[in-house]
Length: 340
Image 1 (cartoon, one colour):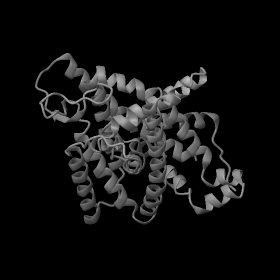
Image 2 (cartoon, one colour):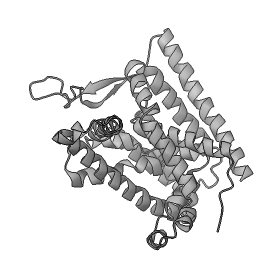
Image 3 (cartoon, one colour):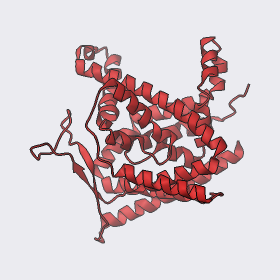
Image 4 (tube, one colour):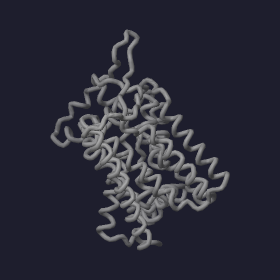
């Protein structure tokens, strides 16, 4: 039986990595899987998830909880999950505010981070065969095509919500494929990552103060059910996708990396900093709004900057900072791998 030899600082870093993954997953156009890939724990993440299988279930049902925990690399997954949960109620909320008030600078930082990820992943690519080049180009085409798709309308049908969970969690397992952006395309980003998460937060805070009035609010309870079904779909997607990716990484390592690199390159269009939000319109030509009175995003109108002003200079600075930040994280990840 293996034991976890991580020091306290390593465990703290794992929580912080989970926090970064959670924050990245919530931002449309950014993939939490990129964080895992660059920082150096992507393969351990995938292989740990694929350990959630029939053997793990047998250990759990038979009451061998310690063996189950060790078998699935539970401490590693648990610390990452803790970081992600903290992120959804802290860093993610701050990012929402930052994107609302300083969109150009935030998108510039993310654009730089993805550029840095492309450099980091591509610099050690060893097998650029015709097949892998084709897969790379195909990944780019798929990534660009996704960024140009028209978003659907919101749909709270529980079967559809479950499917959203399976598809939306792809950003954690497939670097470059943004789960949040896919949820926008499916029409359920606000419902699942804003309204439902806020409902859970209200439930927790009100319960601690002894206020259970939310139990009599049908809309609030509906959002909790939606969040539960979405979480079940996400867990299903994590386990099934991880098994598939684990197989691909074992059998077709460089072809898989080529596809991942293509996805990441294709996602650059989604996070291009210089863009104007385009909102959905009603049949009367007015801007459509959701149940909270928030305008519903349709897509972005992207442009190339022509003005030499302080805002654009800062944007370039944030792009360069994002690139350097990811390269530094990559070097840290390499050192961490060398130690283990």
